[in-house]
Image (cartoon, rainbow, N blue to C red; front, side, top):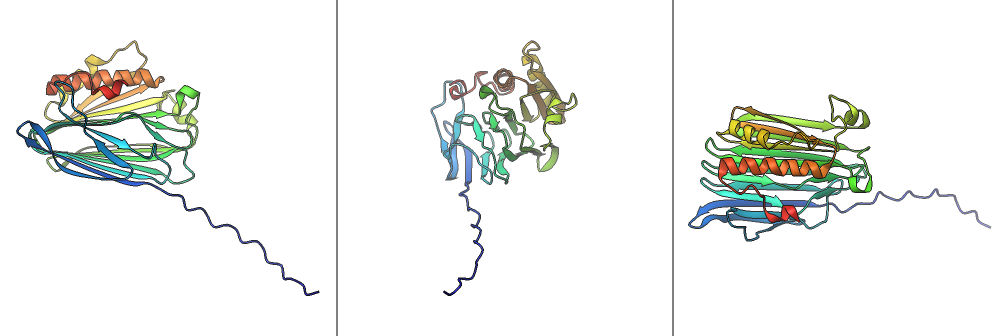
Amino acid sequence: MAMVPFEPPVPPSPARLQRSDGVGRLGFAAGPAGARLCDLYQSDPVRFLFPRPAPGEPTTAVVVTTSGGIAGGDRIALAMAADAGVVATVTTQAAEKVYRSLGPDAHLAASVSVGDGGWLEWLPQETILFDGARLRRRTDLDVAAGGRVLALEMVVFGRIARGEAFTRGALREDWRVRVDGRPAWADALRLVEPLAPLFAATAGLAGARALATLVHVGPAAAAAREAVRDAADGDDGVRVGASAIGPVMVARFLGGDAQILRRAVLRAVGAVRSRLAGLPERLPELWYG
């Protein structure tokens, strides 16, 4: 009988997982009845919806991620622009979920530009990091000397309602602000394993389960700072700090309860947009569904 030579089994090749690479571009120009759409591009899984705004609200665009969440290796890039004199709001349909990663980072990028006399709000709802998620996010604000931007990012660490903590994974959050083409402010937050000491440290997150950053860019940074401070409720357990740096106001929120922190952020956003732009304190209705 002929001997069959032994051949070791061939290891299976690594699975090639499908990844999202979505792009959304949105531009507003001044029209006879307010802001009008002058630029629109979207590729899966990014979609824009344009609900009819409530009385007193500006033109509103809603970003929808049709994939149902963000996985490791996904890339989403958004670009939003408002020409001179335009008032508009861009928000998201719901909280964004970032799932546990098998290794690669998820990448989210938002670029906002505003012309002289314009007011553009980038107010996404919170991002929930599942345990094991890895996220790199960057927000760029490019504002003309007479323009104004109100921008927000919120992060929730773990699915709190089901008792999940954020014990593994990573977060990198970058902000870059330019006013009239010149750098005005930059910031970076980096959380990497081991995460437990960072969450426990008094000089770190000090037990917080959620955080938010609110940035206003424009000629009334000090007024925006005072609006945030006046809206802060010292009895709700949310720590709030706000500073004005030239034309930039930066407010930070830290809290152990994501829902309470969300309400504190809504109060602050409402106070800023009401005092500085004459817009309703209550945000678009989808924030309250």
